[in-house]
Length: 410
Ligand SMILES: Cc1cc2nc3c(=O)[nH]c(=O)nc-3n(C[C@H](O)[C@H](O)[C@H](O)COP(=O)(O)OP(=O)(O)OC[C@H]3O[C@@H](n4cnc5c(N)ncnc54)[C@H](O)[C@@H]3O)c2cc1C
Image (cartoon, rainbow, N blue to C red):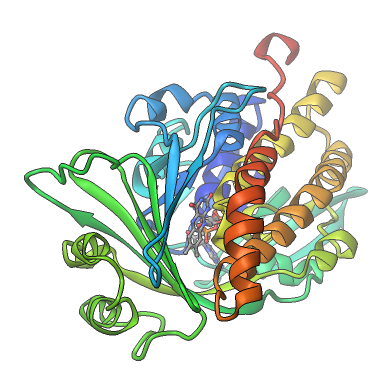
């Protein structure tokens, strides 16, 4: 019998396993892929994520590799006007936003775990619970028929989560938008002055941007309300690159097109942008019989505020804290205490997750229209001029707290 089974070795799954191990709970992570999945290439981590990474004990390692993002430039493709946005350090925690490779983030988290904590090529196909000796136990079945019993299951299995489905949460919905992401490599260095600022370009129904990860690599994205032709899951990266450069973003500034031209094709992916209705999070079952969800499995959101991964890290720390508090109080982790800790975690995350989904959706909606005077006014004057920096600062100042100190644990 495992103590805890975590389904999925993405950001949420690995961060949760690290948080649990820090409070003395051993978790087995089941991942359907053969290795760590790095779809999406890179991501922006805002100050709230760095607070969580600090609690997980890996922030220094990562911060040493990536420069902070201090500002952004947003250019209107039609009239070429550019405005500057500042991303100051959080005045609560002093942390700053940084863009990081997904691979590096996942590897740094995985390195914190004891050997054999992650079992690859292990796709779960079903989950059930039953009562044994008066305690509820969880049973997960893998594709190959293997059965694993545990005291708790944490579903970190992404947008199309089997665990969320088992909890009775309604499936996420399509936002009507999709995005391409990838890395670009300039072997001799990109030499861009504003490399560590987020450069964004907006047009009617499209928004794109890039940010340097280091002197040689950029992370870039392209989002659109109508998917460019030929875009589908698993689409040929050459087709994706050609579509973006020659059709969808053909009027974008040369600097953007040059970044796309230098793409490492193996990193290019296209994805429809999905989200869960915030009311499903506020009123739905986020936990049942020692089973819960974290990360995209709980709160898939559109990426407009770059908070999906950041909030997955918050989830991990909050869940670890509730389990750790229970251990410090009772001396060990009893099955019935797990249920209580998981309920408290779900209660704490409900409002935060629903707020992030709503804020992300609205900011995506306002940024990606620009077809009329009114929508341009809302986008350029109200959102970029007044709201963006405040919304990002407010959301990113969130402090998920710390894990119980080792000395308070038995
Ligand atoms: C275009 C775009 C840009 C984004 N930009 C940002 C950003 O800048 N900042 C940010 O914080 N977030 C960003 N996000 C969001 C972020 O990518 C996600 O929120 C984050 O990756 C969620 O991590 P996760 O671990 O919950 O899910 P995932 O990364 O989806 O991981 C789920 C894991 O579970 C595994 N799995 C699934 N089903 C099973 C099963 N049945 N059995 C076993 N394993 C299973 C999968 O193989 C996968 O490894 C962006 C998203 C998109 C689409």
